[in-house]
Length: 135
Image 1 (cartoon, rainbow, N blue to C red):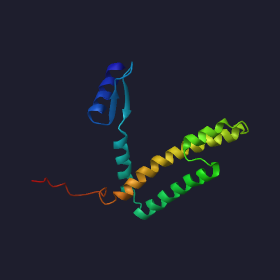
Image 2 (cartoon, rainbow, N blue to C red):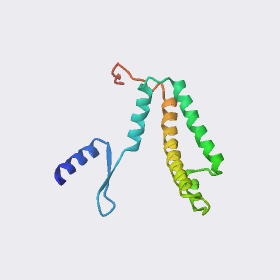
Image 3 (spheres, one colour):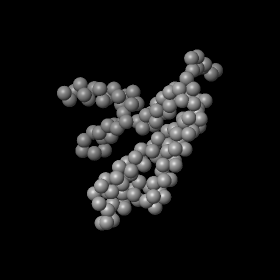
Image 4 (tube, rainbow, N blue to C red):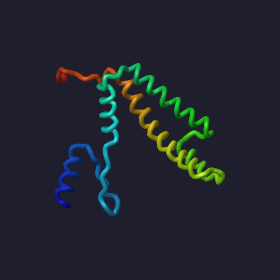
C-alpha cells in the first residue's frame, strides 16, 4: 500500500541509498550511483582476486571495445546504434548490433569501476582496526 511504501522510500532517501526527484508531475526515486560504484569496487577488492587479475580483466574489456570499434568503424555504442538505419541489414544483424551496443555500455561502466578499484587498491583494503579520531 501507499503509506508503508512511502515510509520505506523516505527511509532509503534518509540513508542516502536513494535520491528523490520531485521536479516532475510525480515523485520519482533513483539510486545513488556513486554509492553503488563504491560498493562494487569494495566487492572487487574483497573478492579474493589479485590486482593483477583485475588488471587483466580491465585489459580484456578494453580490447573487446576496440574490437567492436574496428569491426563496425564506430567510436561509441550510439554510433553503432546509428548503423541500424542501414537498410541492407537483416533483422538478425540489427538485433546483434543492439545487443553489442548494450554490452558496450555495460563494459564502459565496468571499466570505470574496475579501474577505480585498481587505482584505490590500498585504500579499499578491508581493515580490522577502527579508524583513529584525529585531534
